[in-house]
Length: 375
Image (cartoon, rainbow, N blue to C red):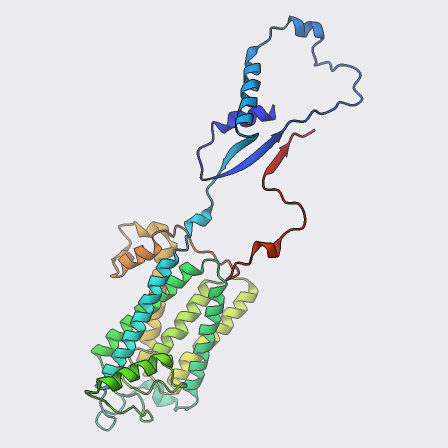
């Protein structure tokens, strides 16, 4: 009876992408202790008088033929897995990485060009800043900023390596990082501010020395643009603060792509303190104007929120009333997020897949599900 029902239900199931093979085993259940026929069981005379219907025979014969044809297995369709809604597409992540690297190098070239335009301190003294009026400069503060930034970048890199959907998250990070470098190039070029403090010693200007400028670009890139590595000796890259961008962006990604349990909330608080202390120390060191830090935080946070609002709400993408679709980078967004049909979950996995032999089960394993009739 159970086997015939499975055969009948097979025709009603839609074709799916995934199937489970179920083996049906027919066993004869012995009846112990029954010496008298059941009241519901007809006698032999009644069975002989009852006309025999050929339909069950045909059904049984067709069922046996179907089992023999399908090697005694029945195909049962199951819903398509949601994992396919989050394809990795590493090639898109590679394009986003190239985008971020290209804008990083272009930013260093722009800093080298702007350095030649920065007015001398004797001619254009630092602009008045309210924060500087109340907080004196502390020389050690900027080193704290850069150390905090390196810690946050390292923490985010380790967390990213263990994310299950690291390809999707990685291309989002690289795209936003490249966008922030691009915006920074624009703001630096159109308005060149004087140095924010008299303590700053800028490297000599090279003017027409192209070879010397290329060496400065390579030195700045190799040192990560950090002062503690001795690679950043140029001035002019004030509006807006690149250190604030990295401190803010890494914290936002750490918070977004991690669970919300108590342990992780404590981890978020630690990362927030590293980010906040680093931003404040930029001002304490008088390395940037207050407006540089405010603009950097605003642009970084707004761009992060806009992108993830569009990415996590499928209904917004095709809505004619979604004004976020009017952003100039919407075409790039649609290219990167075209096949992402759901919100990226905060799940973790090993960055390197170990051989299956390392996890071999000594017990006997079964590749097919066996179903037996209840006795």
